[in-house]
Length: 239
Ligand code: IPE
Ligand code: IPE
Ligand code: MG
Image 1 (cartoon, rainbow, N blue to C red):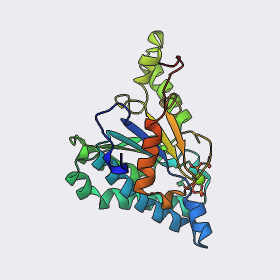
Image 2: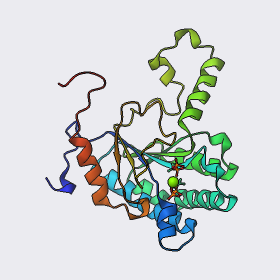
Image 3: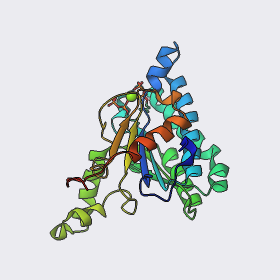
Image 4: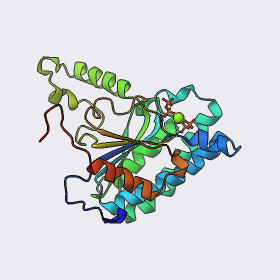
């Protein structure tokens, strides 16, 4: 089977893919450029990846754009990333329409700059009827933060007496979205960095040494092929 001929009918193709898009800074440093240049290149890769996932018929793609810990970076880098997000949302609206792509958010919107939060809310509204690929932007997202915000909502609803994994799920950011099947991390680090802690409990991880700006459609398809070869046991024994 060639890379482009994955059969989306089989269960071996992931329904939900998460990507920890890492390595923008190292990519830029390796070229003697500013870190911000790496983020600019990274945006190009993200756009291509969204198109590939959409064309392949993937249902959900969660992109780790900015973590709750990324505020520790310099003010210049943070504002550059936020400006890129805004530019992306504004510039891609026609592309989202043409490809029936629905945009969603994971993370704490209340901690985002107001204009970014407003922009996201507008794009979510504008694309909410689209039935194609759902792209979840994890922005000001932290897995621990999501769980804590969920606990707060549960307490506010006075629902703690009925607490199970299934009922708690309803208090997470996007309870209707199935757990990620595959989480890809570029740039080689072997850690979650606080990404989808609850939802990713049984995700298959594929870590690539490639830096995010160098990531290609073939790399994406190769990661899916690796996923397809895995046996998921969920704590059970071999089938
Ligand atoms: C990922 O690339 C993008 C964000 C975290 C926003 P990095 O900026 O973390 O790149 P490295 O890890 O420094 O190479
Ligand atoms: C994870 O990458 C966050 C995003 C890709 C948005 P980091 O670069 O922030 O992770 P660490 O610091 O290497 O764990
Ligand atoms: Mg990094």
